[in-house]
Structures are given as C-alpha cells and as structure tokens.
Length: 241
Image (cartoon, rainbow, N blue to C red; front, side, top):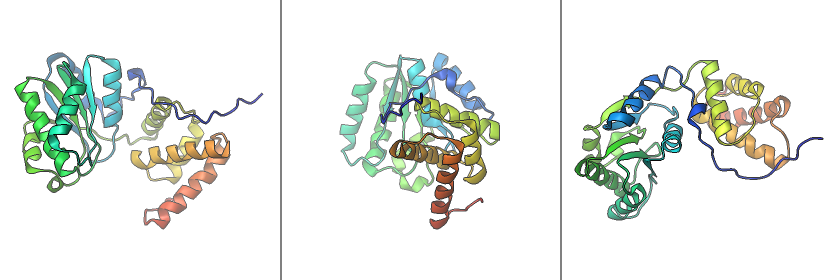
C-alpha cells in the first residue's frame, strides 16, 4: 500500500549532526568552536549563499544557552523599538547569534543593528553576526564602521557534486522532506550550481508535488526541472541544457 501524502507545512528540524562539514566551512566551524568556549565578536559572511542561516539555527538548537534573533531586514519600525524587542528575546544570554537576511537593510534596521552592537560591547556580550551584503553603500555608515570592529570570517559554498548533494540532502532533512539522490543529480546537471537556485528549486518541486499529489520521483522531477530551466531562461538566466 502506498503511503498517502500529507499536505502539511512542517517546521524545520535542525540537528548539528546533519550539518555538512565541507572544505568551504571548515575554517568557520573551527573558529565557532573556539568562540563557544572563549567568546568574542565575530562576523560570519560570504560572497554567495553558503548556509549561514542554517548554521545559526543549528548552533541555537544544539546549545540552548545561546540567544538567537532573526532580524527583519526591511523593517520600518523605529530603531529603538527593534533593539528593545531583540534584547527582550536575548534575555540574560551571554552569547548572541544575530541572523540577518542577505541584501540591503532598511535605514531603521541598520541603525538598530548599530545600537545592538554597541549594547553588546557595553554589556560585554559575545556575539556572531551572520550577514552577507553586496553593497556597503546601502547600509548606514554607523553600522558599517562597527562591522570593522568584528573579526570577519568568510564561508565558501560547496563546489563538488558530493558536497552539494550532501548539503541539499541536509536541507531536505531539516525541512522533513524526502528527496532521492537521483533527483538531486538531475538538479546539479540542469540547473545553475549555486545553493540559492538549488534550494529554491527544491522548495518549488516540493510544493508542486503536494499540489499535484505526486512523489518526488526522478521521472516527475525531470519535467519540473525542465520547466524551472525554461523559466530561468525566460528571465535572462543561463540555461544549462
């Protein structure tokens, strides 16, 4: 008997044992291991998507004494209101994880992050800022100057097929999806080989499989991937097949 598909939006499940330690993240992981013991003020960044947010959630799930805040980058709430809300979430935690979505910040959020870094310094809190930006001119100057006081650590995305497959399977597991390696191999063959595109494609296929009541088989996925490739080509992105 075939198991019935359940149309449920399951919350992500993060387990540190499922994190893929490839060469692009080894330096960051080694530094974070020292940070968990000795503290410090770190800025974890990358030029392309590399799993920073995933790592932040894994750390928070593995170490309950860490305080994690998820910043809304485009918030138009007053800076003081944002800072007060973050500090309420962080409570008495001595170690802070600050997860900021990639890209531009609203003026009020940038100022709020500046004040948060100042409060961390005054309160002698250790922190890791997870943020990838493309243009420093988009952020308030006050915040950019405070970034220079943090120890910057670069993460690199996975490059080999084995690493990409392992990372995508880890993402699927965290979302409680079941994806066959043959489907991932199709994605690596016919879609741009960056995590942003691949994870987005995986999410779209998962949603389509639920809508059509279809399983993520290789034959069904090949049609979906072909449509995704056509859409990307129509939007001016390179089509690799």
